[in-house]
Amino acid sequence: MSELAELSAEDTKLVTLARAARARTGAAQGAAVRDSDGRTYAAATVALPSLSLSALQAAVAAAVSSGAGGLEAAAVVGDPPQDEAGRALVAELAPGAPLHAAGPDGRLIAFP
Image: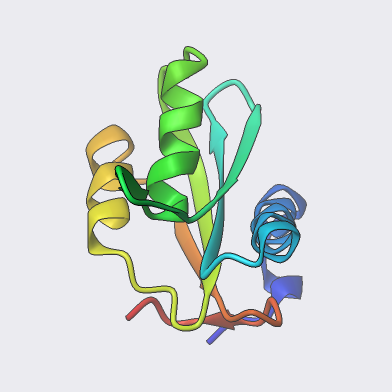
């Protein structure tokens, strides 16, 4: 486990944005990604009868649909922040990008 102080300012911002997206909607998860141009995208879990996306999937989709050519980093917040499909999506777009996981309190945890 790491502390937020160990993250770069940019990665700490991702955790903060993910927490805010989760809190704003009351969703199970919040996520944020930073693209290769430094732009950030945040999203929360989408749970509709006709569409289900994890927060990480939604954040990556927002980045890609906005023209992002790649990702630098990602963060997901939840309890627990399990998301195999989202992890695979980040790995597909950016194999070396760090993926930070945090509990609802923002404290970093190991990604399950």
